[in-house]
Length: 169
Ligand SMILES: [Zn+2]
Image (tube, rainbow, N blue to C red; front, side):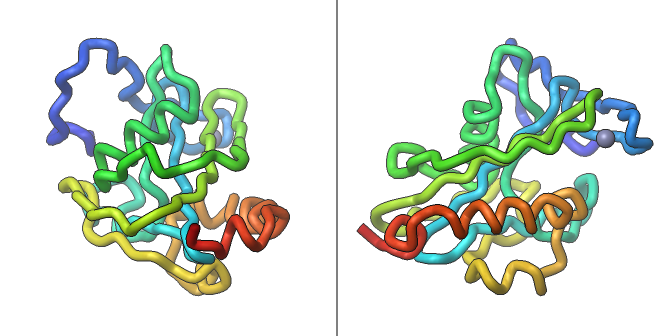
């Protein structure tokens, strides 16, 4: 019941709940979940999750349960703005990575943030937020499911042009 403390003010929030997945794990998000992987100047934004949330005390990306009416992109943006206060006008989406378990899925939306650094406004699920150089991510204590998908995601990040990944336009 990790999300009890979160204020729900929109009626259509119907995604919260656990799924008993065929992979043998329990996952959060009745319709799956999504997260936002933000890149700026060759760095990736990671969120240190509070110890009391599922798989807490690890580094991951902001994200959470998808609602039935949302696609992964909208869910990831909504969660990221709730959890870290990101402003959405200065990002551009590059690709999404789907971890599909059949009963449940997690979509990682990879976006590039341009322009000035934004002010973080972490909520209570967020202990810390930090930019990590892309090549240092592997040495960070990652959320287990993010750790599993990172090799594939990082390989695709390398396919994005250097100018996009490293540039600060
Ligand atoms: Zn699963």
